[in-house]
Length: 246
Ligand code: DC
Image (cartoon, rainbow, N blue to C red; front, side):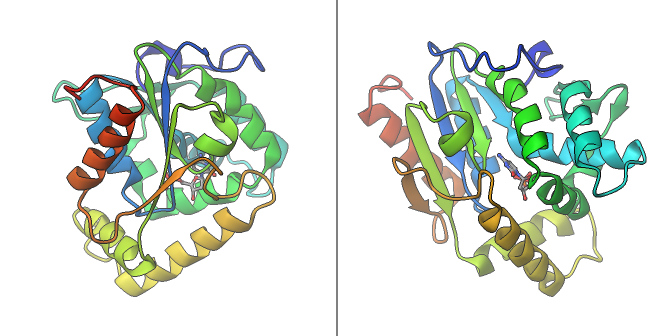
């Protein structure tokens, strides 16, 4: 998600623009959905919705505002009102701004993911983020990355992918990603945190992490991101979502 449409929510309840094609990429942490979504965006020239970043932003904004960790209405208010901008820098690197603060690095930390998973169980926060997510569906199309993109946010999406990978492989991928920035990270601790996050995301009563009934389930354990992207492109091509060049 980039540009001014990301800055605020649109009118609540208006729903996504039905003329805009949407591809949803859902799955657990470390399944590769973020990497694959970005490869698809680059290939197709479509917009990206990184919905996990929105939940991370709510948790982070709550910490900055000094909210109590159990303050659901306070976090829901922030979800509605926070001023967010997804804006690449001069080198093309993604940057995320919360008001006038660059929070990109803070949002990548595992603590931000755990905070996001906690605020994501609250229905008030989920519904406060809905209009903002719908507003990301702009021509020529949207790649929506998250946990409930195909089930709740874009149930009418033309193509729904549910990406999985073994827990061991997912922990290894996250470890590699985090190790580049933080040498103190431990694989054992990370595996425990991922298992805990999986459990919380999959068992919450509202919008749990489950494949949509019409989703294509892809196991990426033995595939790299380019191979998964090629498979998604082939599924889209078979449905006439994009031309033979894509
Ligand atoms: O994809 P991620 O790791 O940035 O997501 C962080 C947390 O946000 C994840 O553990 C659960 C929550 N989340 C969600 O509940 N629904 C989404 N559509 C995206 C993320």
